[in-house]
Image (cartoon, rainbow, N blue to C red; front, top):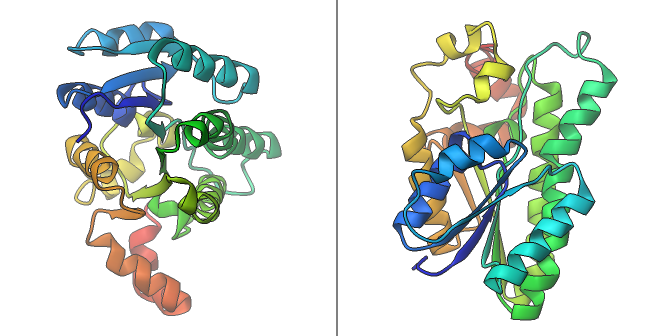
Length: 257
């Protein structure tokens, strides 16, 4: 179903973005790997068999984003799927985190999604089809201690995704959100340098390949939203319906940082 599809991936130099790129190529798609670190992109692309492209791109730079999208269109003629994956986390108490740190994380995690979507949607409208897949987070639905900044960015991504889906529904463009819990990737080398959180939730942490397969499945089936792991969706629904009760029952589980 993905054979020949051109898939633009932000944050493809490591972690989930890199693994998705490799998996897409195995299915005959054409992954477009973008990220700030060109050397890492080259390392990832060395394991890809098939057609692909790499571009150095910072999602906080609108001019660079637009130039990259335009270059991909010029080379491949289309972008079928946009995977907004670039982002990072940093677990700190609100009182310890600077306002500048909040701004920087929002600029990457949320505004990066806005910039890439803004640049690609006109092309998708022109071709009459497309799929935007935004990697949000379980943190976008359930807040926890030491993640005020990260949770806020992912709440923003989810709100943006849901509203954009409504705007584009009748225009042939699908918009999806994927909300994973903790994944065993380099994400935590910055988010949790002490290793405390990783140690506490190791039993709950998902393997990257499981998440990659789920992302690919969303691309194939154009599912609106997916919570990962699937068992977590029960806790998420309880939290949304009865937030105070969920805080009492599940607060210890969520606050492992």
